[in-house]
Image (cartoon, rainbow, N blue to C red):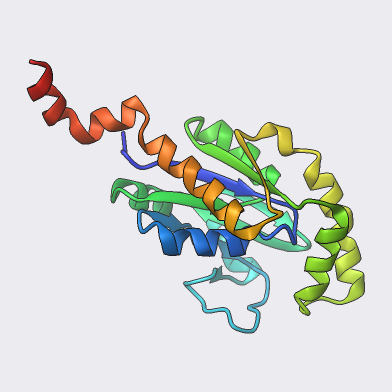
Length: 204
């Protein structure tokens, strides 16, 4: 059993999930974010292999048939999926892994990996969510309205998760996330795996 843990982090679009995770991994080098596959077009500033593995729809469907994905879903007309092998490789290297997925993908992961820990991030209000979506300057008003409609549906699933973080103050939210990872590493089962030799010596 790997010492590292698999984490699911979900949020409605615009809640600040990606920014929080980006800051978290700069502070904690034991955390890796899984790079998902997607069929959506690459955005300005993104790099293939760093932000996503970009696939054609046909390539993605071939991977589905091959059973390559731990989970996959269609969101806003595009496919997103997580490679099973990639996740296991990182966990076996000793790094915690974050999956940035929606609540539907989270349900799939929990069924397949019941030991995964899940975190849901919420904005302090719907008004704040809309402001953040508009501030991106990436989408049309029509797309923003669609995302807001979906966000209301997403928010209803917050109580399926193990942890809840309200992203009102960015720095405090990063600290809240970090505390979840740190406390999990101090659980007895994890510490016994790391320090069994020491424990054997001092308890003999």
